[in-house]
Length: 501
Image 1 (cartoon, helix red, strand yellow):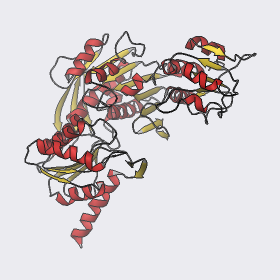
Image 2: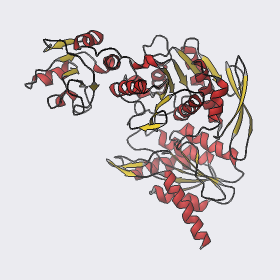
Image 3: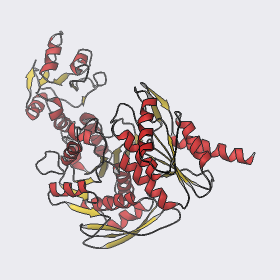
């Protein structure tokens, strides 16, 4: 890595003016958004917040300089602080470029693959990690379930970390010898500049359905946020793109991108098509992938038509960066994703599953998958998050009632909202669907899981949706330990003990 950039060179990149310019060259080797954790001599990026401007914390920071906007400068000048200040119109707009410069543009030193879309991001990135590793690559993974460097867990908080954290993480991966980095890229990350400054070799698109409409005013706005990753006129677009065109949004995205490689599981109007050959009793799917160069067959130990699409997308993304396809799909045969169609087995005579599905389309998809896996009935426990898009709550209930025989409406993460009011909206949607499903309410998520387990008979399938890998439930402002997988195991063991008594 080259020597650290100076404050002057960063000002040129950011188009910033320097207030209280230093007399001697000032080298910057660290940048951060947390005023208390900026290393001495580092650069504190003070952003406007929803309640307080970050510059309000500058005075107590050990940073050697501050990057902020005009409002932040005015706050700093009200104190006796005389440290250098870089002043720009919009900190977020240039933060990624500045952070990339501070850390030596690490994404240039490895192959960077990004995946966006509403559903399937996590699963696709896990498939990529597993397949790339099998093909001999040294892989870093960044996403919803956490961050990994060559299989080791690394603590992070956001699906896509803020730009300074992301660039520092990239630098760490580079320094540890990572050759390929796979990451989920959310619409928030694209809109808020978290991936600005990252140079993606290839971007993948899974699908689009209703989600995040608390952040995006409309589905069209949501689409446009995703399109920043593919539109050649966007500064954020990747060098190459692979787009699943199974839905109309994917077809629209392919029309927006420049020379995309298209993937489909339905029809033949795509560059790469996936054909489902058969499904084992275990849920393992045998798939044939048709590409312009070859056909390849493999077994995917994950159920669901959507996972056929995810596997096809992952394989095509790997092929686009020169990875041997045969070696890659050998890795897919060992793929597993925490909390994604994760089976819980305590020796019971019915299928028990935990899944992250928290959007109407995802709920419909997982229930349809289970329907195709068992001959018996389907039961589901479902809720909806508080302080988030409220319009999808009745839709969640409706999809549950349409896809299952037994629906338990319970709490997800109510946050600061009244849990009963959230449940009422989900219940209303379920009842308005006018299906034959039995619908009950259980405010306690643990009791909802108990109800599912008690209801199940041999040959049935039950599923708890909404939280998947998460190990906490947010009630008010407090996060309580809660793991659907632990609770499912507890309930299954209790049922067994009761029946053996």
